[in-house]
Length: 458
Image (cartoon, one colour):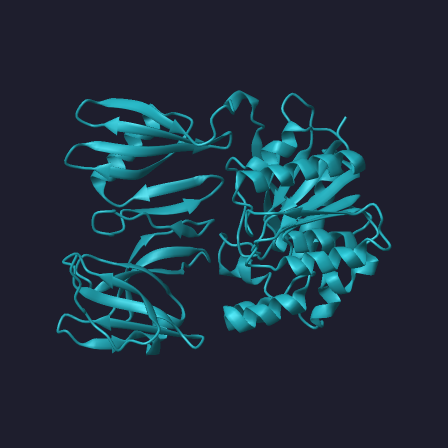
């Protein structure tokens, strides 16, 4: 294999992009916590893009075929984030590619042959796609018709041979893989993401729009046990991580497991969640233990008021930021929750901010941690541990490289002295996201036992 130098002298650039002819046109990265970006025009001149005003506000996704325009992620008039084509030379938006009135664009599938963008992805209740190429769009419509009831993604293909690999999913099915032979007009299932999990045994998930205490509303997703009336059920409020992430109606092993054990599962997209525009996400900025926590509590109260949740049998749980929210729920709203579960939780905010500032945290992220007007210790579970008087299950992975296990260990050692019903489970592998089967099985077994003790389903 032969290699050749294409360019050098661009310190901090970690990502390079070419046009459709294979010419190097754009590179970006970070150097000493400062964004760097360079673009080569048609005359072979390199321009510093980090000095342009547009670069401060738009996120880059890819180049057009000619390399003179780029796909950028930018705000729409409706407040969501859409995809636009930007004229690089002028820094002006040339055209809108796609936007949605309620949610952000969140994915841009590419052609594996030339890395060009072929579709725009967004998530309402389930992930959806708008294909930019007419032939791709036609194929996508035909496959959705053939596989009625499923959302479809084209994940690989060979145009010349006429074969396509499709991924089909819905709220009860995590994923089925199909091969479509265009020439033979034949569609065959080739694999299943989670075999031996019949759709008819999976619990339904539906969206709720929940009014919160300041008069606004938040979206949430409710998974209910099958063949049970939605009335005074033992309930787990499952808070997502991030906090700049979001939940949707997609099949979720954690929620499905809990529902199979008789629990209603509520997943609230509190303000601060991603996906609903900058204003919605920014409302959670520097609101750890503030607006974000109140929205989760308001969503819990909604289930009680609607008669869905048994007010005496509710547990709050989550991983990473969700683990933080679970412990803060026990501290700030002990009347709502009978127990809490934290998995690789961000329980020590001063430590989180310190380590992130040393290794990878950007300044806007660092500034967002904590609660405006309060010291970090005022909203840090590790510093408020004596206020936790409900049973807590603390789980942590030995190989978590995002949040060190020692923080969970220290948190539990301070908790158990005055809270003997609390438990600690060390997980040997799985990392921060519990990626291994062994880690997930350990987590689910521990949760099953803990929940049965404290809010047990009938």
